[in-house]
Amino acid sequence: MLPKCQRYAAFQVILKQCYHTYYSLSTRERWQVFDMPPYRVHPKHRHILNEIQTTTEPPTVQPVGVRYHQAYPGNYHFIMDNTEVCSQNPFLVLMVPVEPSNVAARDAIRQTWGNESLVQGQVVVTLFMLGVSGGADVEKLQQENLQYHDLIQSDFVDSYLNLTIKTMVIMDWLATHCRTAAYAMKVDSDMFLNIDNLVIMLQKPGIPKRNYLTGLLMVNRPVIRTKSSKWYVPEEMYPDPQYPTYTLGMGYVFSNDLPEKYVEVSKSIKPFNIEDAYIGMCMKNLGLTPSSPPDPSQFQSYNSKYNRCQFSKVITYILSSAPQLVNYWTDLKKPGPPC
Image (cartoon, rainbow, N blue to C red; front, side, top):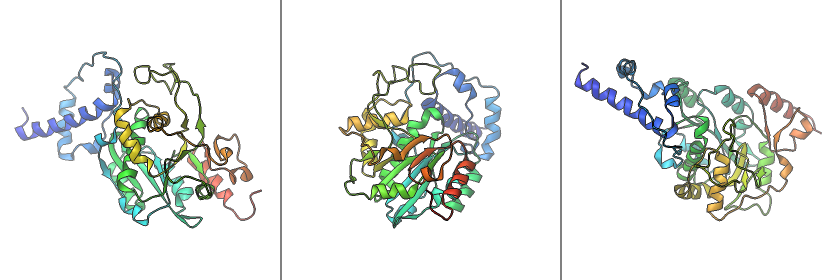
């Protein structure tokens, strides 16, 4: 039998595993494939955990229906932070949700639109939001953050099904750590972002400074009930057949008074895993409606081929790879008129 102190340490490790598993998984099969991040285990206890895991069967989970994701960000804690960047009182904060292991995407953004810190005379800050995952090396992440000072990490499980949690943790961080910013944008890591056009848009007369959310509007969108779909949502999670108007999750811009309101109203909204539609629900429950951009054509999803003139006019495009972002950005920024 293991000494008492070692048994207690092992118990703490397993308790943490159960905590994260409870909030992100709902079936025995998912439990079996889930890999807890190694850096949640102290090195001197890892051999104990391995010994226990080889002889312990995962608990049987009874089919009690869907286990709802816990999207309220107060359930989670920041384990890596860079609050000091907001001492600059930025005009705009770009929050990029990205997998911990996706260094290529972060580096491409740092070489392109994320490298823009003064745009049209306004301070812009770019930060990456990460959860925890089994494929990430904590020491490498720490070294990366020491070099760039742009990582924010919380202790939720980083997975596709937990994107709503990730988005709400972004909102919580903005509400508690960066209140002085005027605007923020949640922008995916596979995006081309014309930051100049974005700041120009936000400085136009008539753009609200409060209760403002804009992007590519999704209106009267049906809820997907096909189980094989990436966007499947069961009726137990979201019973209505249609979503309220929302902004497509690739990139939406909002006044920085909204994050605190989203966090508060989320306490009364049943979570579901389509994060952009969930923000639409938050807006609806707040009695607010997303706004159409001054020029809706600037928020684009996909473009089949690169055109320098076209890319000089838009704010967003979804891209297929990090090298593509670097190539397009380099070409766009070369000397000479784009059109």
